[in-house]
Length: 128
Image 1 (tube, rainbow, N blue to C red):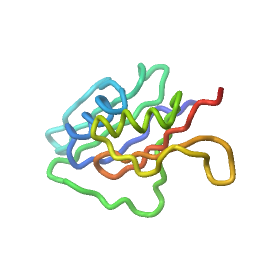
Image 2: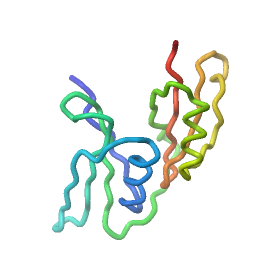
Image 3: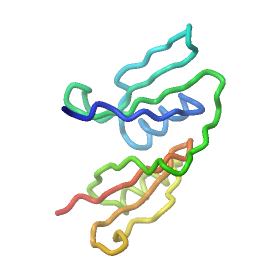
């Protein structure tokens, strides 16, 4: 078994694609529309789906916002330097919600940013 993808419902597909590609450096791997059931899917990630886990962005036509609820946590990405990544993301128009620093009770350096729909993305600094 392997993890294939994580699905996120988004309120504006192009805005979300822009965030994940332009700001976080992912690529659109494939996109499809279902006119009968009125939704569009975009699969994005850092590499081919045959070897990497990816994100599925689901846009249900006409739905602009979702409630986050209390169960969802975050997506985690490994970065070389969390502080540098925060600065690049902020400079590109992204929202940094927790600056880089050690995780509470530990030494791993993390930061958090938010996508346009409010989903949290944790940046975990690669151990040297």
